[in-house]
Length: 267
Image (cartoon, rainbow, N blue to C red; front, top):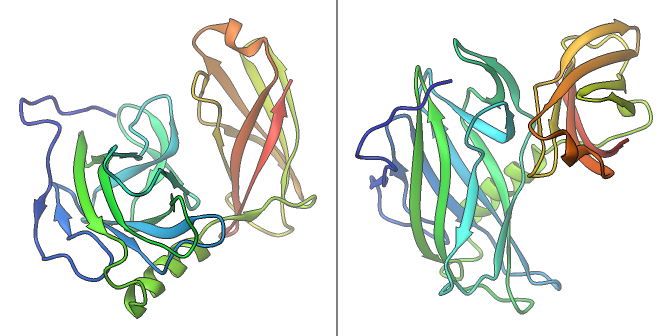
């Protein structure tokens, strides 16, 4: 993939509609319209659910949480003035995308990323301010920075917002199972081998891995499949010393239109 380098980057998105309910306005870049939606009030732990809606234009793509060898994973950074203390993004299963420069994990179609905002108290909502950063790609990739500010308590009972947020969370992968997930991982220096279990009679398995921030791993490739068992291989990039300590890798495994997510220790 290749990034466009211009003096105008990062791009600040322009408003295309007024804010409604407990959400930001729709805002537009070269390849996407984006908004942030929240629904309800914070639960007993102070968690308030929301979604980042990304409406990609035809031919445009965006990145998963760990794109691979290159890419810009979506991030939310809250401002000190925000009533919410933190924001955590979650990701539905991505696709394997190949272009002239690399293979990477991302989305070719409109996608909603669930988000949980952390508030100090239960049963509350308030001002959420910050910025979201992501990359959108056609033939080149453009980094987009979007500042936002909205009042999550404006209309917490809005039915449309509730449907949007519920649908985003419903699209997340289920938990990995003994018969559908990574069963073992082996490593010899930079080479990694992931052994997985798959549902019977499913096609097109794909494995996506999200290592800790200091470690970079190439996109896993399917090397072998026999019935409900398969082997994917990948390589670590960068400083080998970073792999001397035990690491936990998060992953998403897709097969036959179904997806699960889990964790596995890297020896």
